[in-house]
Every structure is written in structure tokens, then in C-alpha cells.
Length: 177
Image 1: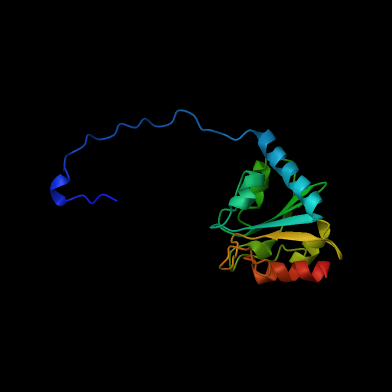
Image 2: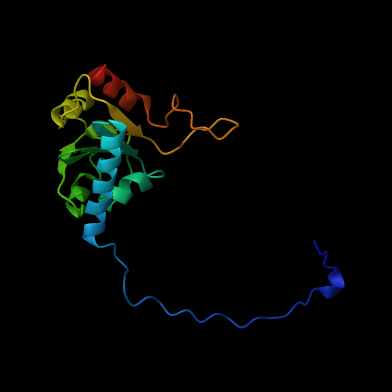
């Protein structure tokens, strides 16, 4: 490693960068989303997973966005992918965003995923009932995707830990136990 002395440092004024604003917005083709879901389904089949539930919130949304092309704006969301269909559970503030999905999905309104103190009076079904409505049932092998992987000192994934809120994991356990 070479040490640089203070005398070797040259201080100079650089010209301002001229950056032109973009003229077009790059977009991921819709077929890419379908291919991503198909690859996930192939992996699920190999691993004997019946359904994948992918959690998202405002700060931790990329797993969700990778498959759906949109992310929850201010709240939480849950994406369900099985071998036949995709479904999303969305709260009050971002329920209309399901129309942006690049693949066919079933969207269910779940105010429990909304910000605190949002109106819950329109909630016809609980989270457990909504999960059952999308097909989650006893005996199903479910993969639950949070936003953080836990590893031990050797770098092995700790499968006994998950970064998904307890009210969601509890609802899943209730249905599949």
C-alpha cells in the first residue's frame, strides 16, 4: 500500500458537470415479470413449496416490486404466488395500485395492512379470512419471504428467524397448522 503525503495532493477546481436530463424512462418489459414468476414457480416446485407469501412495507419492498412492478406507498402489502395464480392483499392507501401490476392478479382489500388509525369499518374480512380466500389452507407448505435474512457466524441462513410482522406470521400459522 502506497502512502500519499500531503505534498503529493493537488487541489484544483473542476468544471461543473453538464448532465442532460433523461429523455425517456426505461421500463422493464411486461414479459419479464411473467418470466420471473415462472422461475419462482419452478423453484417452488423443486423445493415442494405450495405457496410463496412475500411481505413488503414502505422501506422493504423490493422483493414485492420484483414480481409486481409496483410497491406499497405508505403501508404494508402481502403477495401470494402459487402454481396457478397471484394475489395481493393491500391496505386502504395503495389498494388502487394493483391496477399497475404487469401480470394478472387478484387484489383483496385488507385494511389491517393500512397505516395506524385508518378506517377499518369497510373491512368485511379479517386477515385470516382473506388468506383463506386466496387459497391458504391446512397442510400447505408455505414459503414466507421477509426483508431480511439472518445468518450465523459461518454465513448459514437461520431458517428459524423471519422479518415479517407477527400478526401476519400468526395468521399463516393458524391456517396451515
